[in-house]
Amino acid sequence: MEENRKFNNTSVESSKKSLMSRRHFLKLGIFAGAGAVLGYPKIKNEILNILDENGLKENIKSLKNFLYSNYNLNAELDISKIPSIGHSIKSESTSLAEQSEFLIWICKEITKYPLDFIKNSGLKSIYCTKALELDGTIVTSFAYGNIFFISIGLYGILDNLYASHSGVTEDFHHELFHVADRINNVEWAKLNEKGDKVYMRTWQHNLSWDELYKELTTSRPEGFADRYGLKNEGEDKATIAMMLMTDPVRAFSLAETDLVFSKKLEICKKLFKELSDGKMDEVFWKDLSLGNVGKDYWQNKK
Image 1 (cartoon, helix red, strand yellow):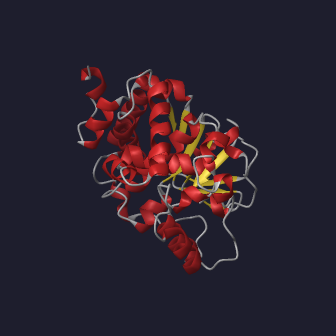
Image 2 (image 1 turned 90 degrees about the vertical axis):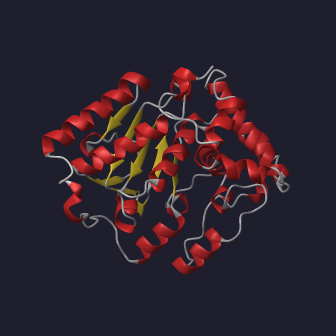
C-alpha cells in the first residue's frame, strides 16, 4: 500500500513519529482497478444473526477489556476518535459484528507475544475501520508512532471476512513490528549485496495495475521475505518479522539456503528477545513453528 501514497517517506523508519503503511498485493490491485474508493458495499446481513445487538456489545466490551487489562492496549472502534496525525485520513465505521470479529482475531494474535514485548514495544492503541484512505490512497493498514490502523474493508469485500483472517493477521504483526522497530537502518542495509542501493524507496505511479501486480508478485528476491521489502529498510524488516510470526516454518526454511535472509532473520529474533525480556527465545520459536503457542502459553512456559 505504501507505494501508492502521495508523499515521500525515505527516512520514515528512523523516527518513531514516522508514518508507514502496507498494501495487500492482489487485493489492492483488484480493488483499485475496479475504481472503488470508499463506501464499500455492506456484507450481506453482516452476520448480525449470530448474536443479538446486546450480545455483540457485551462481547466487544469483554474483548476490549481483555486487551486493556492484560496489555494496557486500547482497541478503538469509534472512527470519530481517530487522532490528528498531520495527514488526511478518511474512514468508514464497522458494524458491531465486524468489530467483534476483529477483536477476536487481535486477541488471538496478541497472545503470541508476552506482556513484556507489548509493553516494551511502546504500542498504545489499535484503530479498526471498515475502510481506510490515507492522503487520498486506499490502504489496509499503517503505523504512526505508538499506534496503528487496520482496515477490514478490503478483506471483507474480496474474501469471506468471517472465514479467513489471514490479511488482518499479517497486517497486525507487520504494523506491530513497525511500532517496535529499533534496528539501525544503516547497519541493516549493509547486509544487502548492494547495500541501501537495493531499495526502491517508492513504487512508480505510472504502472498499470497489471504491471504493478506483476512487479510486486514475481519471485522472492534473495535476502528478502517478499518484493515489498524492496521498498525501504523499514518494510524489509517488517516483512521478515511478519513472516517469522505468521509462517515461522517457511522463514526458517528460507534461512537455511539464503545467507542474507538468515542474517536479517537473526537480527529480528534478537530484537524480539530483547523487547520480551528474554522470553521470545529459541524454545519459543520452536513452539511457534509447531503450532504450540496459544492463549495459556506464556503462563505455562518455563
